[in-house]
Length: 504
Ligand code: GLU
Image (cartoon, rainbow, N blue to C red; front, side):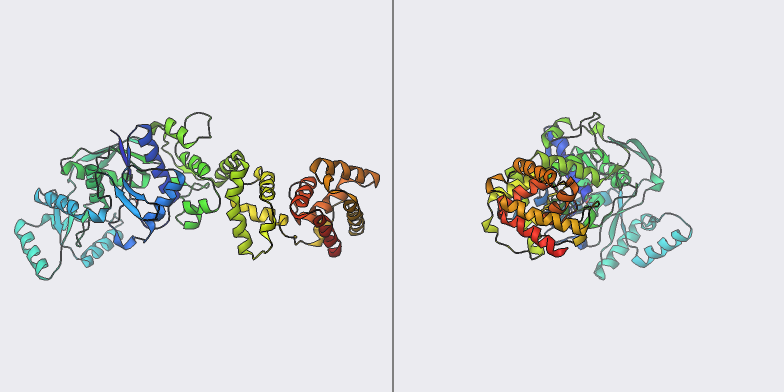
């Protein structure tokens, strides 16, 4: 049975690259009717961030990326562990790593290293001066059994502990047969004798990942390209422990549109920030699925279920995947247009509230019918790229707009003419009965008004619309008038026109 895992280090926000890794391993597991495991890699205690796992689970739940084993968020916000191959938190598995390291030392596949940090620093400097890659010089590997005994004694007397290093075979090569990249050969002489157990008894990533992937019976490791150079070391550790290595699929780098490596700064890449800006989960999932994968057909729109159906490791690209937010906006607009009105309105409400709160915009919200919000949402549905735009785009539907007087003047008109037109419009609207404030009737009446007065369209419709919206671009005047009259009363139209005349 296929078993995949997502193995994040809980160091803060969820990077878009992590979401991609989690999504791909989930899609593959579901496509193969396998299991998806969540394992938390917290062996680097210095980088551990409180609350990071809960946050991760919340984001994954929100997006529909599921796990079958590992940690689960309960309704009360607490986490629960579930699964037969646990514990799923590396800091609870120290005995397993220590046992593996001990076995490797006993079989001389790993060795104690007593080198001081000063010596290692010296070594690094010498290598840097010679422009050689920084690598351990295997100094402690050459110690005799007696010397090792002696050093262990000295260390234990002074309350210190040595680290354990893995002994990379001195000659030969290891071939990584990656499901995305194919065969890659690594000469052993370029691989470092990495520390696998630290002096505090914690493993490093390299040992922990192998022990856990083996014990959790992971069949396919799907992870980012940055781990490809570590893979030969992992394969060698597997073999040294007498285990069969898993299969590997390394996902291509994610790049900015200029082909530089995608930033790590939270503001640009945090999944939770994309969600709070009002990107829909459908859009994010569809977009992220295409970061390095495509169905090899024209089809671009995929639901999560369709992704599960069509996902295939063979269709993962080797070359970097460009992170293009325009494309994300395109997906988001698409899924916003697909939403039914009441669902969209409910999703927009918190964004409206937030906008008003932040700007201390005050008015009596309870006086407005829910239908008013729905009709505004309907007008904006075609244009919205993200939900967070709603506040600014529609502020004029709730409070009188503020704008530069010049905005009122149509390019082929002037201040004098504009004033005259606006005055006539006040009279026009005052005569208009309430039932005529529908888009169709307004259009007909206003067209008559324009031709009767020998005006041209721009001279009338431009100042009319800008006096109501305060915006250079907005939905058309008939739509805006009928909706404002519905929500705030027809008197509001005349009031705004009067305010415009005062500005001129
Ligand atoms: N803990 C590693 C990370 O945070 C996981 C690497 C792997 O999947 O092997 O990316």
